[in-house]
Length: 219
Image 1 (cartoon, rainbow, N blue to C red):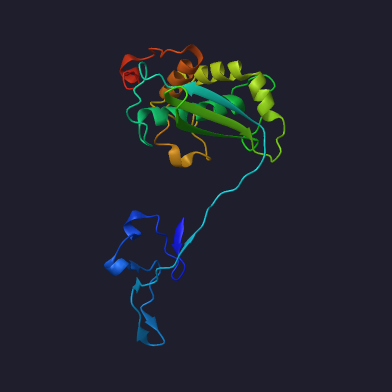
Image 2 (image 1 turned 30 degrees about the vertical axis):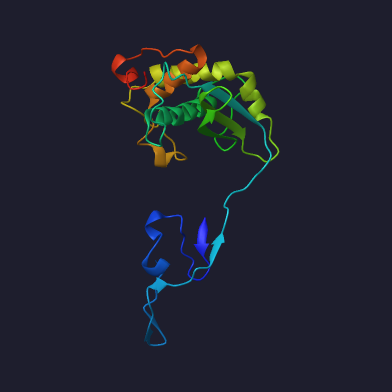
């Protein structure tokens, strides 16, 4: 994040860049100071960069899934692209299987395991790769990720089963994918795409659970 050191405006928002003579609107303009009018524009050229984030050591397990462009349509990997939404849904499906799927030795609480995903370009493989991370939320690890790794095949199978056969909602609901933690993603989650991506992860091909749904993933 880049900030004006005088008024505190963030320059990472496109609407805040530029301006008259390289000036910018103040984030919290004051119209009067001691009875005198004050300009809404800041003339300062002084900038400060702030990096927001933190690092901690823990245990984790990663599913690394090559995205074969001859099978999957990888032309749109943006935040609203089908593959991106399917990846998000698959990550949530795995967490659902861990927390509510009755997998042996995985009686875990949602506060004990976290998850994330990303899609990266692999220079070595010459294609995009989907990575799904499942990790202990406790710093230093608590051994839960190792237990997930030991039962990973069962977790994937259980996630597919829960998404495809144990719910009857149109896309997602609190019985399959939705929870308080992912409340801002509810409109994107899709249990069918989650099941299909996980099936692809397991078998290397896309299942045809429903032709109309699968056509959106197939290249």
